[in-house]
Length: 314
Image 1: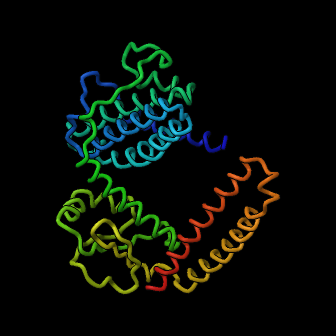
Image 2: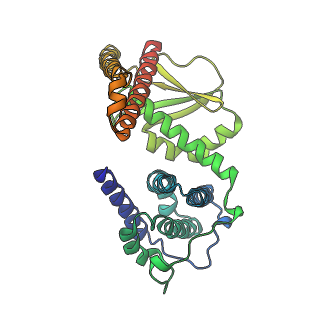
Image 3: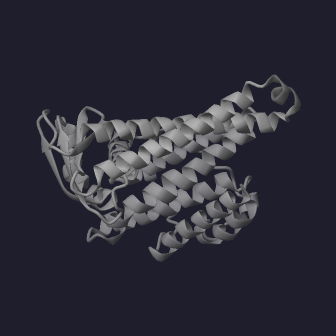
């Protein structure tokens, strides 16, 4: 756990360095609710949702839930997705979009540091020198952030959520099928509505780069190309022809071996957790840890079984 939080600190530090290198400096007159780019409206809204969740948890004295909320927002939403998706805007030729994205990133970092400070005071205080308003006092005496209702834009949330969901789904499928990291594969979007087609047009280049795709096409609902694995993304079906880039028989054997190993571990844990003597004598934390491990193993086995089913469809 200590190592994990060390990694979180490094992740936060690197995100701050990214912002610094891209000149994301505080802009006192910036209003994120007026941002034109959907990505910038989305991240401002996600910051507002996170702030409200933290307020709710703190009011209920659920400090664990508050810490988990800011951890998830900082690591996944901001450091992973926003930083990656913002790169084309920050390096593009549209000067207004560059300026808006710089101001948005700085605004979010400012609020993120204030929300995170009670849980992680030292790194956040150090980074505050970059993202606090000019002449601002130490972070420990800064005001707790408040978020207006106008920051939450459901249209932007749906659009960016669609992009993230598609990229994450393709990455997960590639990982399950053991597709080589450097291999680019085609994607066919079957039965997509006009909204999904428009989003693919707007974000296609970005999706292709982050999901390692060689090309992307849309088509009416119908048969997927031979050798494709399929996943559902909202109203559409995503077909990924991978028959030429993996050894199907070898992958099937590998997954079956992993499934058998997981089944054995699950059986041992189930036997352990059904032992009344163990439940009576073991500390509650140990019992909870074993139950969580059992749940994790079962979830992983379901992923393996889903992957095997996809292989059979090839």
